[in-house]
Amino acid sequence: MTASSCFKHTKQQFHLPEDLVYLDGNSLGPLPLAATEKVSATLEQEWGELLIQGWNKAGWMAAPSKTGDRLATMLGAPAGSIVMGDTLSIKVFQAVDAAMDLVPDRAVVLSDSGNFPTDLYMVEGLLKNRSAGKLKVVEPEHLASAIDPSVAVVLLTGVDYRTGRLHDTASIVKKAHAVGATVVLDLAHSAGAIPVNLHDENPDFAVGCTYKYLNGGPGAPAFIYVAPRHQQRIRPALSGWLGHAAPFAFDQHYTPADGVERMRVGTPPVVALSILDAALDIWEQVSMDAVRQASIKLSEQFIAGVESQCPELVLASPRDAQQRGSQVSFRHPEGYAIVQALISAGVVGDFRAPDILRFGFTPLYLDSDDVAKAVERLALIMREGRWDQPHFKIKAAVT
Ligand SMILES: *Cc1c(COP(=O)(O)O)cnc(C)c1O
Image (cartoon, rainbow, N blue to C red):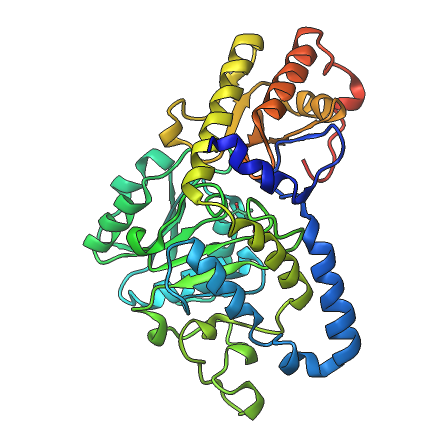
């Protein structure tokens, strides 16, 4: 079976607007068709009929761990090591705080300037509430060499959100562990994009969102992984009642739940979890290695097409596919206007300041005909300067 024939079946399971080439699944995945039915069932048969009994009878209370276990299978982690909830920013806060506790004699959180800003912001906020702590941010190329015995936590985002550059996660984890540091791995642009094996990569914590490559929908819940060796030692910073050992005992004081469950905070997003379950039903039909191979093929086709037909666009991603995640970026000083013109021509990518045009490659619902169409439309816009119009230069709130 060729890569393209093996994904025809999954493409049919998404809603994609007519004649649109969607190259932004790295930012917000499309709607799985089965989600509508799943959500209706959650609303009508569960919420509608069961009302508050849904917590017990429809398994709502257990949903964050149940869905977490499905993700664990996909990410090479054991059952009982991942739990869903909140947004990724919150999960970064929880993981970094817990990771710092594991190395109490050190205060440095090390990250790199290619990291997504919210991860750094959350650490800034977290350190405000700790007696000692310093965020050290280095260039991505210098991250590995900056790991020394002063470092408590390496906060590592596997794929650079702007350029798609891949970090060598396993070797950074090894280096960190060798000097007694811990690692929080952010999988926002890795889960559903590249094969991930948490057992082999061996971070102490991992976090990620599910609305990007995983197609869980806008505002889909995030996930957190805690390595089994640490689970019983963590004292959660966000000690909410649903991370308590006995939430319905209504004790005056907090006692952490068993294992990763203690990373739960408050009421789980039941409706959003049912959408994510529909998306995971599709993921469970494919192998991540096949997805990776297909994504490399599509990316290579796109790079070759753009470079031959749009010489003004400069590749910002690593040329070597093994050094890239599942996205390709180009630079151009008028990148924003070009992306707007492209969107109006039915090819959706996005723009990241100051000059990055970003395109995600998602084989579950994207094939080589789509990529050919995208290249053709982009080439026309560049050749005829169609982007150079005032209305393409007005910045919207979300770029
Ligand atoms: C997308 C992304 C986020 C988003 O955080 P939310 O709290 O879900 O808005 C955080 N970190 C990284 C690395 C991301 O790529």
